[in-house]
Length: 63
Image (tube, rainbow, N blue to C red; front, side, top):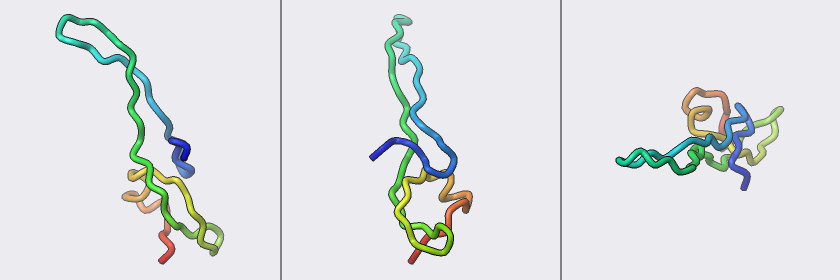
């Protein structure tokens, strides 16, 4: 499963993990991606959607 929201396009973000001694190491933050059945043009499809899009109502869930 790709770590990308199919609605908003949100993907991994990268940055540094900073220790107490100020040593910086690379780290990533992944979005909270859920695989949901959603209606696309009236037909149910499985989509990888982030939870922000689900909460914002950008996706209509198929029952």
